[in-house]
Length: 210
Image (cartoon, rainbow, N blue to C red):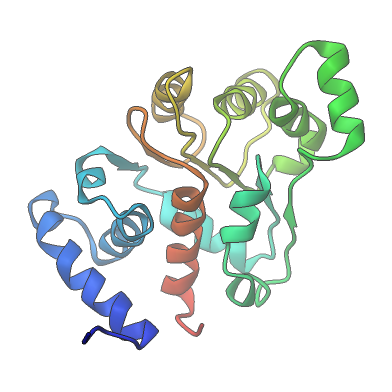
């Protein structure tokens, strides 16, 4: 059986297949690369019309990375999906506390999810950071609360939780916020690989070495 074996050839062919599905969206070159990477991670070209990028999101994320910002995630799957060699060039850390025993205790005591408790525990450290949420709508709702009530302003929120309970509503609320740039996907689609792919796309725009 004859098939493509070289990783970059596979990626390039994938991008060729995705490109016609973006043609009608009138995206910038940078936006096209972020959309393409997210669609590539999902394996689903039907993502194209549902992806939402704030006009300042890519620039804000790039500037934060170049300043050595941390990335705060809701689940380990997002942290795992971020390309470490690319991220390590900038000096920040990728933080996820969802599995910490302390967070489990807080969540149980306060009657909230562990992902929500983790975001609350990060607190003011989220200011100027990249927040990447790929699983838990409750984590995204908590970040939005912190933005509105505590004026803790991340550089950008990549909010792409997946599922049927709260996911669409949390992402709608993110897109309606007026304080922080964002990347999201409307509706129930999403997930940790998609959130990680958006970060990777932004890093590859800065430096495409792998």
